[in-house]
Image (cartoon, rainbow, N blue to C red; front, side, top):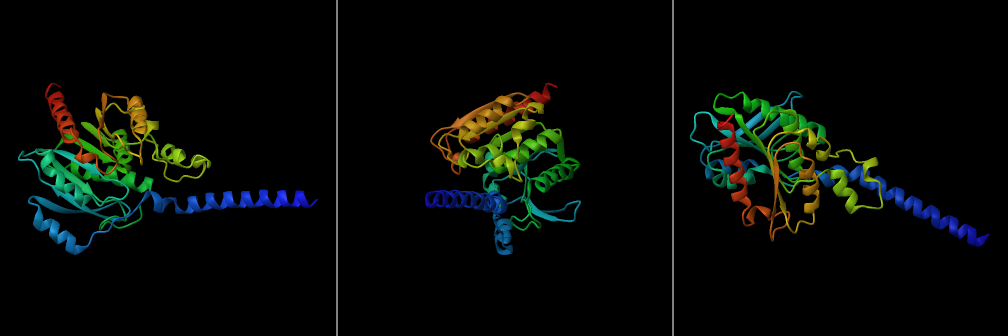
Length: 281
């Protein structure tokens, strides 16, 4: 009887421990996915003084949340082509302005997610997706934007936002940097002993809608990425419904891919091909 009691106690302890881990993961998952980055008014002043043709943008969503970000006039054309950028889960997007010279000829919009930078509200898959559509709609109707030449660029978490926008809106092209097939699949690989799909609230299931998207796409994956291994990008690309390509950037990691050989060259070659293809239509 004593041995049975010990076994029973051990089993109960294991079950309680397992359920405790599941509960902790369930209630802390938002803070693990959305690592909000702040921005001070002093930093905004520095950005405004540091970059020419960089305009602060404030957008009020349909549910009265104020989003804050940047519009960079980076083209001399009267009706400019536009890149809408969505950042990573721990990224304050004003940093992307530093790369504007690598995207010469394209205006840039970079708006912080809810709860990031000076944007109000709380991030979630649902409201970030809605905000992405609203940001697109707001700029597509501007008289100084060529709405036939709008491209979305998403990095890491933002790749899922970019995929969603490509599914919901007409775009000229899609640029995905360190993308994933789904957050669920990435998380399941890291936590193999727990059925992640049963409790994840923000699955960002890009691979589910990828076959339905005909927009041309380029994906760039970091060779030594341990956060989102390249195989997740490859799986997404293989399911893409339109023309697609993938570049594995050698000797780079998740947060250094933009410094890799051929990274910006590949993106600009893609942009040139998009513009040329639109001319022939």
